[in-house]
Length: 110
Image (tube, rainbow, N blue to C red; front, side, top):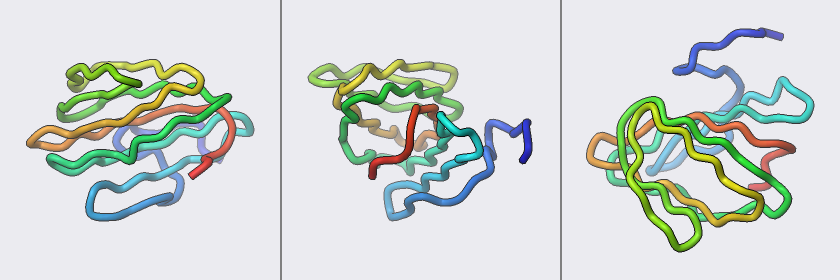
């Protein structure tokens, strides 16, 4: 087990990969998952919600738009977004794409 990771390489394994993004999960902790998403230019994540699960997104590179429930707002490198239990959420990358890490409790549902 490693205790320290670079924000650009969180370790773990690829959980999802397609023409929109590459998602990797580090599951070394018992109660939290550390995940990274490299969202390609002008692509969007799958919109979803997690009843009983909160998330924290930290945007490392790029820019775009965050969608939470019926609200949309710009995101840029350095922004942190808190996603409350059960809120619908989706990220839309800008022209240069965006890379973000997230922390959530429990296990990946999908």
